[in-house]
Image 1 (spheres, rainbow, N blue to C red):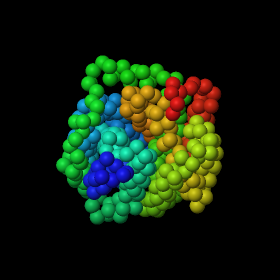
Image 2: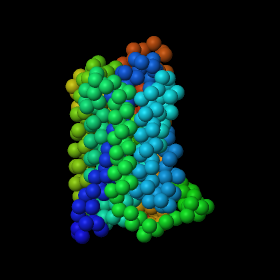
Image 3: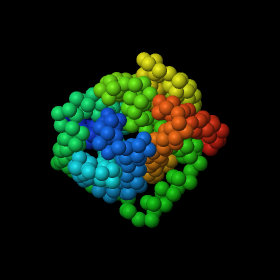
Image 4: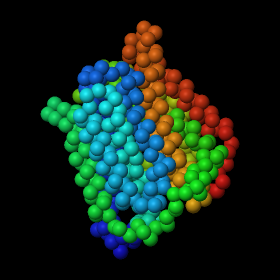
Length: 412
């Protein structure tokens, strides 16, 4: 037995690799619309609001799955739940690839979001039971690195494949890879989950969610999750691509290369976070203070980005991506402020806020751009002004975090 897990070393590596494969596909499909946006706009005549709504369908379905996901994980385990849901995501890829109208695109995108909704939560639950406690933080950091690798795969590699296979062929290939990931999880993971505690899918379980959402400390960070953390993922997974083409006048291929660079730096940002976070805590910098300082920097960066052009603008976007990695600390911090019996539901309840916020952010930001453009300003200026409006919302979220004095019910 390995000292770092409750499984033999080879099996421990296999478990991580199988679960990471599903999360890799989840993150790649989350970000892929940023790379194929020019093709979708050209073929279907999408407005910015329609493009935002289409991409947000993934996050809408993802968010809607979070509460039932918690019950399924406790009743059926990570292996069966994740394997079944990834097959649903594969079906969504095939529907998306065959779409002849915006409605079918939306349905396909929503099925994908629903299907990959359990990729990370299933992994975190499995890690809790199959690996030693001292490995948990490192495993989460590694999963985020794998996920960012999926985002990388959705940039330059996807753009390179488009002239050969088209965006429809790319989604067919994604569907096949999801089936492979599902089969690997279903058949290569251990089957001893019956020894894990199970919670009946009854009134008591759902009352636990009400307990989480009634907690004042949960909402101290929850507003930040909806506005600032969700805003970052919205930009990273969709709006940076159109920003690069419409505001910075890049070609689609240049934009894909810029996105590749941004996500590559983001991957190293997560590695840095895994190394730095415990050291910052030992230095006395609490998560609350760190998030507040991070948001001050993010607000300053967004104001600068709204006025920047040329290479400086790309550098500012990359710095923003690295700084925003620290928002990932909020979910674990808030979830661990609850009693152990509520920890799982606290994770999925917070995840619901994040992905519901991403759905709103992607849709509303596109709507803001279109609304500002109706005043007769150039599209480039509409993008810049929309970002300034969003920055105003981030200022309000920061004021809420600092001014709302709720305390955790237990030490986090």
